[in-house]
Length: 202
Ligand code: GRF
Image 1: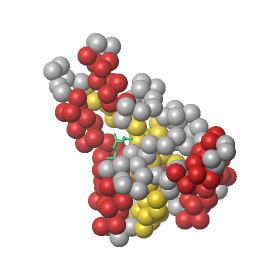
Image 2: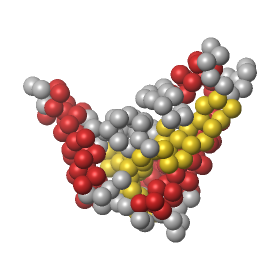
Image 3: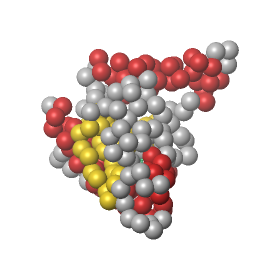
Image 4: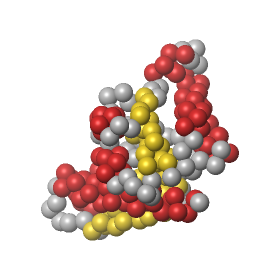
C-alpha cells in the first residue's frame, strides 16, 4: 500500500514513517506547505519525491478577494493528491486546516486521511496543544495528556480516534522535557496508526 505524507516542519514524524517502511506501507510522495520544511530534506535523502504546495501564489492570484485563496489552495491540493492516488494520506506535523474543498473530493475519490495530534481527544484541539496541556497541568486542571491518531474530518482534530496514547505528566518537569516525551510517543503512534488505518480501510 502507498501513503502520501503531508508536512509543514521538521518532519520528525515523517522520519519515523520513513524508518519503518516495509511490506505494510511505502511512502510514495511528500507534500509540504512550507518550502523551508526540513522534512523535505528527509524525504529527498530517502529518495521520496516531494512537492511544495504553498499558500503565497494563491494569495497573489486572489489579491482582489483574499477569502478565495484558501479554498483554491485546498481544491488544488486535493487535485494533486488525487493524481498521485495514494491508498492513504497521513498528516504528520501538517499545520494547515483542510476544508471541505479538499476533504470532499478526496472522500469521493476514496482516499482517507489521518492526522497526528499531540493531545487526547477533545482536550486541546488546534495549535499549540502541548503548551496548553503544560499550562493546564501547572494549574492543576489535568494530570495526563498524550497524543492520538484520528481520521480527518472538517472539524479540526475531532475525527474518530484510531489510536490514543496517554502520557502521565510529572511535577517539576520542563515544557521541553514534556515535549520530548510526547514526540517520542508520537513517533511510535504515527507508524502504528498508519498501519491500523490501512488495515481498516481495505
Ligand atoms: C508534532 O507535535 C506534531 O504532532 C505537530 O507538530 C509537531 C512536529 O511534528 N503537528 P514533525 O516533527 O514536523 O513531524
